[in-house]
Amino acid sequence: MRKTYKKLSLEERIAADTFFVRIGTTDSVVVRKLIKVVNFQARCYLFSREIEKIAPHFSGSEVFFAVYGIGGNLTKTGERPDIDIMIATNMRYKKGFMDSFETENDFLYEYRMEPIWEKINCAFRSKMHIKMEGELPDNYNLGVTHGKCLITLTPRNTGRKIDIVYVKSMIARGTEFGVHNDKFFVSEEDFRSKDVDAEGNSLPKILLYRSNINTSNKSGWW
Image (cartoon, rainbow, N blue to C red):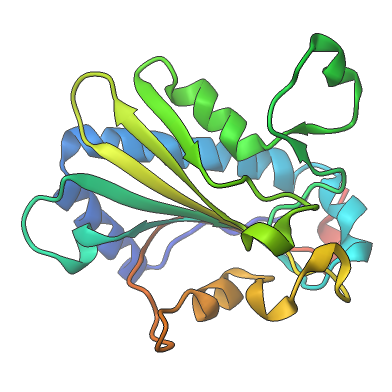
């Protein structure tokens, strides 16, 4: 079985706890549920054979999942009208994704719905209005979307709207799929170094969750 690394440092845990206190109990429940969704997909992916399928085709040795608190709850005072969260990962499936299944027979193909998007819908659709803005990134559109889209969760009853910036990438070797290597990231550290403003300053974020694996350590693979 592969060894994964999830623990936040003491400093990261304190910062995460401070973020949850600020957004309040009601909205913390939703954000923690979102983290569970990401964690479930991380477990499905990190212990699958998909990593072995794509490893020969892409640069980098770390596959990671991370959830951050971002936006006004970090940079502004007072209660904010919504909550900004970022999900970042370099998860890639060799066959890419479908936006939706037109018929039941589509399940016979190797393609699948984008898993984070699918799991968010399953987890929240009974109590939230879910909307996606932008195109979900896959193997074939990374050069167009730069691996980013916005998913909004609007409560049907109590709570604030949650804006989820979903960022995904894995650098392809060469320039296949129209990928420009300087726009994409192969590790959590690489992502953080590139998540900057126009002046090159790091954008404010607080880590709420991480899970990663070093794919170069073959001894930890099935």
